[in-house]
Amino acid sequence: MNPILITALAVFVLFAFLLWLLVLPMINLWLQAFFSKADITFAEIVGMRFRKTDAAVIVVNKIRLLKAGIQTIDAQTLEILALAGGDVSNVVSAFIAADHDGKPLDWKALTSYNLAGRNPLDLVNDAIESGDYSDLAPLLVSTNPEIDSPQPAI
Image (cartoon, rainbow, N blue to C red; front, top):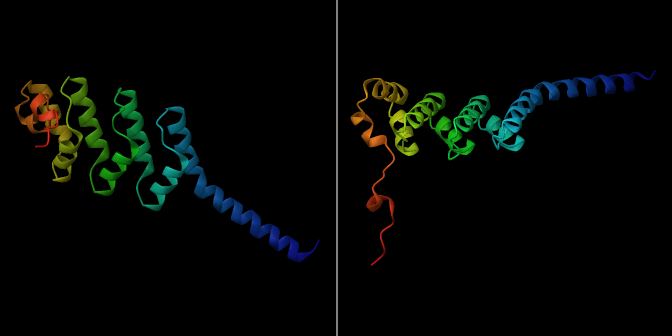
């Protein structure tokens, strides 16, 4: 056999193997998201990898939110928190715990609390255990119709 053909075939096999090693983890994450109906595309997972975001954390926490019945938080919102330096798993756990206790939290307030260096999961767990939700007041979703409805422009 021709040595040039053998060399070309070896380079191709090596390239295909390296490509497979790089793409396989992303395919695995995409399959997890797809079968969990997490609405995360393969392109989004590739983008997360280029942006140096831990795509596994985003996919797993998006699935956790969906399984908890919370569909208002998308993968891009989770990625924004991760890129800002927040603890995605901790914030999602706090969000789910409060929601299950009947105290829905405002996502922006919760992420701000986390980005300020505080642990929202500890705060929520302490509030649930003690039954005292006064510490959670700034993080709760407002139910005041005067605040929630837009004011007419004058």
